[in-house]
Amino acid sequence: MARVAVIFTGGTISMQFDAARGGNVPVLDGAAILARTPGLAEIAEVVPIDYGLVPASHFRFAQLFDIANLARVALADQATDGAVIVQGTDTIEETAFFYDLVVTGDKPVVVTGAMRASHEAGYDGPANLRDAVRAAAAPALRGAGCVVVLGGTIEPADDVLKAHTSSLTAFRSANAGPLGEIVGARVQLARRRAGRRALAGAIAAAEPVALVTATVSMDATVLDAVVDTGARGVVVEATGAGNTSPELLAAASRAIDSGVPIVLATRAPAGRVSGAYAFPGGGAHWLRAGAIPAGSLSGVKARVLLALGIAAGLDAAGLMALFADPV
Image (cartoon, rainbow, N blue to C red):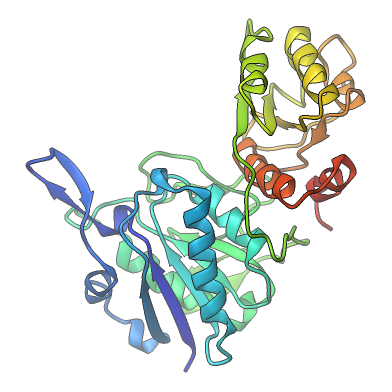
């Protein structure tokens, strides 16, 4: 039988309603969640690891490195076939990508959680946990890197996004679609990942790294301010295929000239930035100014990658290579 390490970190899957506080709070540890999840013994031997009860919106990079190290240690055991990280869903699209980058090797790492708290009708935590353990134990997912499993689908960490605040099927891969799905007791793959980025041996993330979203009637004020206050890098979520106001581009050019790396992403949920537009502020001018195109990465994922890349000491050429879409 397969053996799967399950790291419990909190999140909605661990929450119950607290009348005194007027809302949901994390309460259930790993043992309590496992007690609510029948059928795991028929899937794999589960080795529970309790990290804590941390809302996903509270995570700092240092904590993510701690969790990644727990996964690495567990996966280093030859008897362990895969790992599951149980967490809140608010930041899964960022944290799963973080684990994808820093936890290397062929064994599956699966991130899961719940959209409903344990006291609510339709509590989805147990079903998601069973699916995640099944995915982590599946030989078919070896080499797929980190994936997100909620609502029955298997999503790659570098593309998945949270598309709805409360839907049980909130997670989607906007560019290429899911890798597959869990159907009953089967892990069914529809495609393989083309490749994955990696920063093996990463031990730190640069901070602060800012994320700025371009909007209508936006000038240079916000970007100038984050650079002036010490940002070590900035991701700009441009409109469309990489276009902004001329003023915002001018601020980015000043930052690049001063040695602050600027990554150009799109605020659209899918697609890539390009140099197709050459009007003032268009993507062509951003790329000529030295902005690093984010490939297919969303702004929040690009910020994670930029923070790790800067901490790793990569220069502009190294960052450009790191952000290129893997093949």
